[in-house]
Image (cartoon, rainbow, N blue to C red; front, side):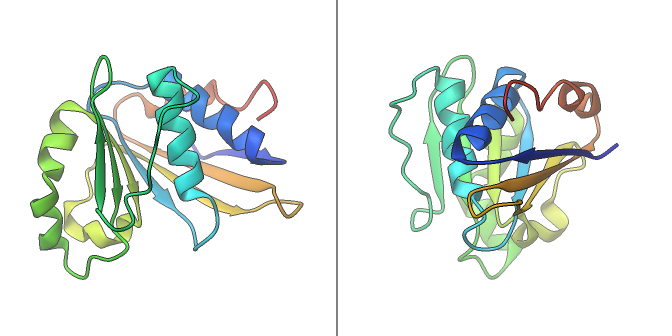
Length: 158
């Protein structure tokens, strides 16, 4: 089942990210797909802030560091930006196995993972919406109970 959610602006993106963060579980892997400027980082920032229950949480982009780890309760959230990687073997240097085992992983540019892509994951594809600030999110579940969790998303303005 693919769940499609259209939002009209950044606020809608933040609501959707917050809804997803509210149903997070240890070991979750969320792969963010979309071209440059589609809002992958904005979605991840909103997700992390919602997970931290802190709208002012500082969430720097991992564009140059490749990974940012947020030691949150009950599990850490790992935010990966794999854009600069050229070989999936480089991912091992980022301790991605630890992230998959005991945290929540948000991964931008997941095509760089290639054969390391986990089977149990949620793929989120972001495309332009009906206006300049709008976006269409396609949520594609793989494994475990992702389908049940995403079925509940999309209300309250998202």
